[in-house]
Structure formats: structure tokens, C-alpha cells
Length: 145
Image 1 (spheres, helix red, strand yellow):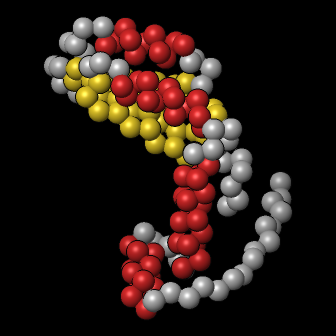
Image 2 (tube, helix red, strand yellow):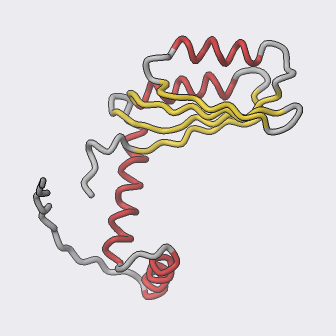
Image 3 (cartoon, one colour):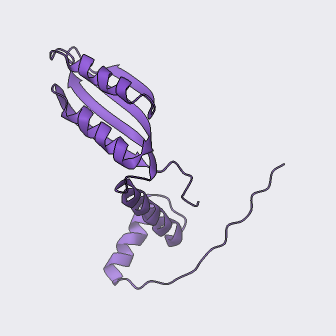
């Protein structure tokens, strides 16, 4: 049986306007947090991930989601070429036929933030792509629980 070392906890206090504290408590209940500390810790983690995404040398993980009309000339070939150019950071792909004309493609990525952002921008800007979005998270290595 493996044992996990308990992580130390740092306590600090913050002052909030009463209405903001009320809204925090309401959100915490709606999201099933057992206390404010867990809700605030998750918000801090989310902002740390967002902040690190802007740092080109940090490793991130995420998804690039694309919706495109597969009837548009060369769109599939263009997207495939871009993906093959970056196979080292594209971990997996999912391709779904939404209807007769539209496809949804989700690429799971992991790598340096700057490179992932450039790949996402290139894919999203490809002619024939109707909508695209990069969603990032941490690889988990640098975030405490």
C-alpha cells in the first residue's frame, strides 16, 4: 500500500464586500464545494493555468476544437497537413460528422504554450473552418491538489 504525504496548508484571510462573499457562497453551493476554501483554491488554480498559457515556455495540455464544412475545397487536406507538421504535440484526434455538411474535430494537445497557441491559430484560421477554439489546462505537474 502506498501512502501519500499530506501537503501542508497555508492559511490566510481575505476581506470581501458582503455581496461578493454572498455570491461566492452561492456559487460554492451550486458547484457542490464543501467550503469556501475549496472554491477559492479552484479559482486560483484556474487563473494560474490561464496565466501559464501566456508563457510560451510552460508545458500545457488542452484541446483544439474545430467545426468546418468538409465540402469546402482543400479544408480537410489543409487541416491534415498542419496536424502532420505537429504530430509531436498532437496526442489524439476525434472526428465527428455533425450533419451532411459539417464536421467537428477535437485535437488533444500537450506541449509548450507558445507552440500550442500557434498551432491552434493556424488551424482556426484555415480557410473553411467555421469556428475553432483552444481550451487549455495544466499537465498537472506544476499544480498542487
